[in-house]
Amino acid sequence: MTHHLHSQSSGESPVVKSHLDLSDSNMHMMVSKPEQWVKPMAIAGANQYTFHLEATENPGALIKDIRENGMKVGLAIKPGTSVEYLAPWANQIDMALVMTVEPGFGGQKFMEDMMPKVHWLRTQFPSLDIEVDGGVGPDTVHKCAEAGANMIVSGSAIMRSEDPRSVINLLRNVCSEAAQKRSLDR
Ligand SMILES: O=C(CO)[C@H](O)[C@H](O)COP(=O)(O)O
Image (cartoon, rainbow, N blue to C red):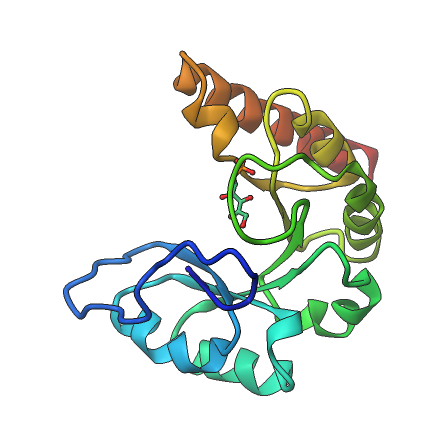
């Protein structure tokens, strides 16, 4: 969901209709006031609420509120945010999301220079779920998986493919093989 965190609004309505069924969804809230959407997302059935560290002055209170509303917690950082700002919260969250494009829209170029953030997080927090989002596809997923990401968001690479299923399988396999290798190396 996108609302004011970036300059190119995708135009989503700020109203989450009560009939919206978000069961088992991980909501990546690219919004400027993530506090105000916790309850509506919980009511709609979201399973995980991911907010941007840059969008709140009190991450601790927001994490607590998300948990009290029965959801798992994801914490995202934009490309310009240093990973050290996320570190103090890492033991309180379920997933760290490293953006590999500026939040806003699909089809942007993957920022490989975000990989040291992923690698650092994986080294410091071996069992944390780490997700990357932006420009991830068959050409870039290896870099993400080798750096330590075990979850990826992929839009254009799948949607533009003539064989989306094989792209999805490839992305999934690359991530799970890298995770398996890491656990054997430990
Ligand atoms: O939401 C995004 C940016 O705000 C994502 O980057 C996007 O949805 C994923 O698409 P793509 O794989 O085309 O980068």
